[in-house]
Image (cartoon, rainbow over all chains, first blue to last red; front, top):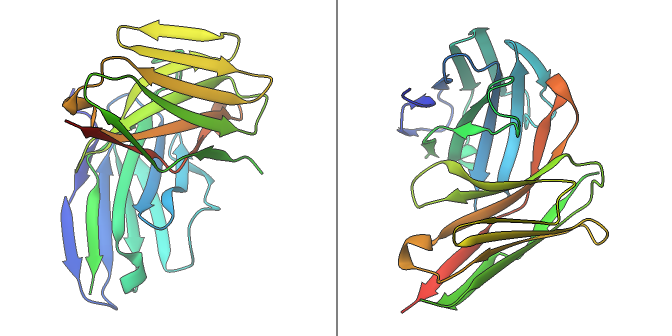
Length: 116
Length: 113
């Protein structure tokens, strides 16, 4: 298995532009998580889905952020409009029901976003 | 609410043992985890411990769990330069579809030659 796939790996954009981050979870996994990592705030859970349904989006910083999971193999995190304070590494992780008894989350390599 | 705390940095000499400590708040956590993040990469599960265990050993790694004090530690024996990374402690909360992890800030392990 290729693991969790994220694209792009790096994104540099200007303030005000729309940014879309993409994630393909591991095949067969039914939970998907979006995280943001910064030096100041560490690792923050933004939103997670179970069977394509958003379960908890309380970590989404504001209305400029939105996430979708149209099917079991694809999810997007969109920022519109982007701001310099959104600069961070965004991770996607997936977890499979019954795959492991200890509920391991598998992380993608991350997308490094820089908003100028 | 739930919280996980760990120190931000630990510096050890190559060959010595490293001990990374973590405290958590949710006494009902089922599993506690240690994840490792190498530079430029995502997090990867290093080891975990079930809440009814006190200790777990896996080669150079020893995890100790003190449920009374809500304290978790990770000991790395014979620390090598390849162990340089950020180590995250996490506790589990919730059940089934609500199962998620609460993360510490991560401890950066620095290896001195």
